[in-house]
Image 1: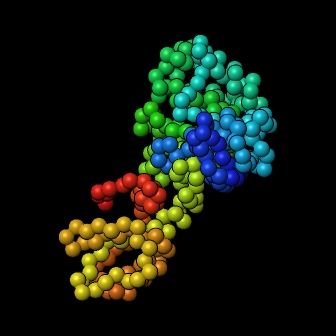
Image 2: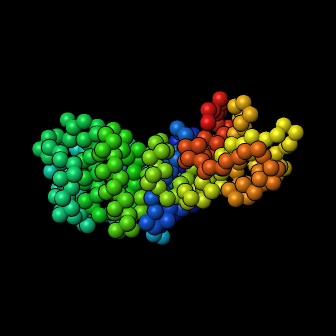
Image 3: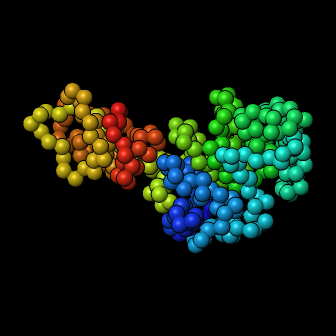
Length: 297
């Protein structure tokens, strides 16, 4: 389990993290989302042990992360901005990883050659961005990590390789109980792979829940009502729009309670569907000084 408690971090007077809290369950694939500048990469670097927090605690399985080799040897981190030694090729990096990670699995490294099919003699700096990402996954997955931390992990990969990489990651979660923390702007993709989601904004946690709970708590309602009737009172409406006679409402609250409340006023027609993760992201931030205008549903 990854625990982040009241973590604060400032850079030259700018507060990047402000009493941030996160809880990533063991064996979960946790999607960390937020607008640009929210602090996603900053907290990821703290959890990976790259940065030291000004205050607060960061623990993995109850043990502090920073300057703790015992934790880091079971943690693999793929940043958005990849780094490899200047003259190194994939074989050189394999030797390095094998020396650092005691659980490095040479058999798995060999088997993954059939997946990634990279030129192991070519210097890493001469590989394309997509090939470098493949190399990063080839090495990271071969360490058999207990915790896998990913920052924009599949950016630069083609659709087939993206699916292959996620298949490998989800296989590790299912078979080995690997805990995965992933930050990405591709919310549609996160929705397919994550079971927990945290939304952060201005260095603070706005909410974190399982994806199913999150989707059950915000609904999109499309309805047609007699003009003489009014909506029931007590609905927590985040957004309204209208196209002709059809109203579209975004309502926060239990889906079944929302359905019952709308049905109680006998609309001519109504339909209730869960929002996508992208829509939830937009409307949650809509109440947090995040300018969103003219949204087309």
